[in-house]
Image 1: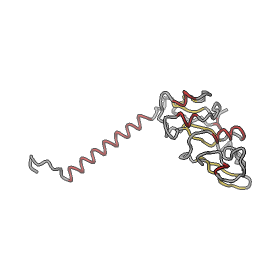
Image 2: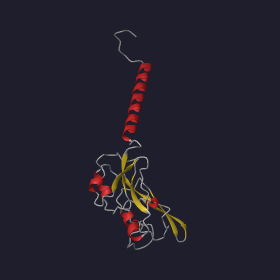
Image 3: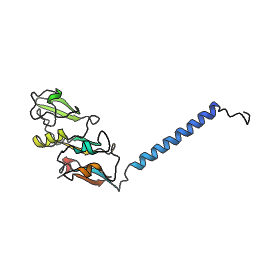
Amino acid sequence: MEQGDRRMTRRAAAAWLLRAGTGALVAALAGRAASRPAPGRGVWQIDPRKCIQCGRCETECVLQPSAVKCVHGYAMCGYCKLCFGYFLPDAARLDEAAENQTCPTGAIRRKFIEDPYFEYSIEEGLCTGCGLCVKGCTNFGNGSLYLQVRHDRCVNCNACRIAEACPAQAFTRVSAASPYLLKETLS
């Protein structure tokens, strides 16, 4: 190639793309590592004993959908046919029709085990953190459904908008080494 000829060869283009891709990958990994809290630092979490299911987790989070999701404490669940986390208290029928369900997004799945038992699971991708199922389970059931900040989604703001808006002061800082307050293990 002559000095005045500035055309790029395929080999040079491939090398440039490889360097650029590697640089982008390193930058992305560094950014991801920097956004994760160090084990000695604190992260935001909901104390399920204080939560009043006000619905602000869904609307106040800087992320949409919210980083707060419903979780199911299977060890606490009664596997009831009439689950108020799943069914509205005044449901016309105990079938899986949308008008009978508590969850507005259909994030709760119901699976028949044996009469009269059903297993309930949360599809987190559909959960918006509204807390309606948690409210039903807490008011009329055994409280096996509760809200938690999912740290794989949370951006770990220092000034959490949900914590500022929480009327029950249920948002607290916990150690990043054990970031979840599981209702079934709290006394």
